[in-house]
Image (cartoon, rainbow, N blue to C red; front, side, top):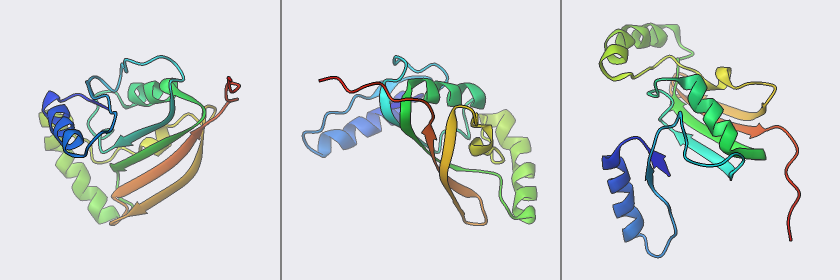
Length: 147
């Protein structure tokens, strides 16, 4: 698991330690420069982080770089609402939150996924379209199984 905040990593470590013998590596890191090799993971999960990364394109490119072909990309975030009154409020709120904390409410990461590299398998929006879950799959041939 990677998080930019050492405090969040400390909280996660405490939860892992309470949960018993589970092997989890927790790292302080940048979503735009992941410390892993190409095609290292069968799945990449990003929950409620793409709204606050400085460079959304770079973070998505890094997620796809470390994801093996055929691997699953799972995203969950608050996004631009499908309801225009809510969307209007989100845009007004961003006038404060983006300069103050780089917190975006109107991003839609699913729209930024490169269609030549991923296939969107499913999406689900709820709460006036403000919350969105995305399941995408990296295109390309999976490396042959060794063994």
